Amino acid sequence: MTRRPLENLKQPVAQAASNPWVERLARSGYAAKGVVYVIVGLLAAQAALGTGGKTTDTSGALQTIVTQPFGKFLLSLVTVGLLGYALWRFVQAVVDPEHANQDAGAKRWAQRFGYALSGLGYAGLALTALKLISGSGGGSGSSSGGSNSTQDWTARILSQPFGQWLVGLLGAIVIGVGFSYFYKAYAGKFRREFKLNEMSDTEESWAMRVGRFGIAARGVVFTIIGGFLIQAALNSDPSQAKGLGGALASLAQQPFGPWLLGIVALGLVAYGLYSGFEARYRRIDA
Image 1 (cartoon, rainbow, N blue to C red):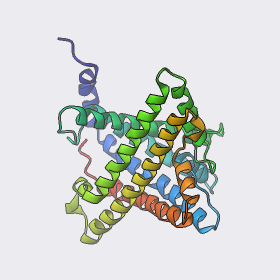
Image 2 (cartoon, helix red, strand yellow):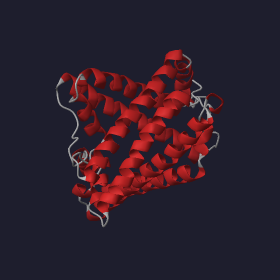
Image 3 (cartoon, rainbow, N blue to C red):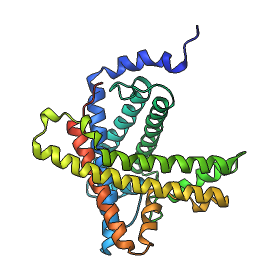
């Protein structure tokens, strides 16, 4: 019987995952992701307060890092972390080392597919960082929040047969992910992902607080992004699609916009801090 491609990959990937460096790279990845989200949140919070800053995406956060003193060195460290996180996501997609996917069927494969997409996304972000370090450009971290790249791939999908349906379906999936973040924040089951025996009561308490707040903020952002995708599909207009920065900018344009943006911005900072707790205390059974 012919083995499935994923099954053929499992053994070599599992052997690679057993290397201690995989866990180190994964932890550096959580730390790097935390740094990026803290910067995105702080810039958005400054915009909400009217003290400078801007609504931007993760690429814009990388551009902010590279413009600081010793920026290329600092961004190099973040890039290593982003590559490590991408690698860890690919390992999770193939071999599920933490045994998170116990459910059979669609739910199991949807989660693994999500890991793979996350890995591709962070690998792309690392590539953007490498371009910034080399001085060859990279990313559109303007106040549009990377909307140009979002609109580019939305336009490519819309140009395909059944393109409007595909973009609409993608928007619905993104909204579904947003609601799954709301549930994750409410249920607090992410507590089980930590090495609780190594955490003090204070650390555990703060990890739960920033985790709930940060994950809920991500839910808000994903829901908004999904809504814009559905709007782009209904009108067959890729310019209506928006990324992270565009979603944050849209909050500022609503009634009580500065308050809404400020709350979500602080939530993204909290998510970055939560990622820092993950870097130190997350169970990584590689």
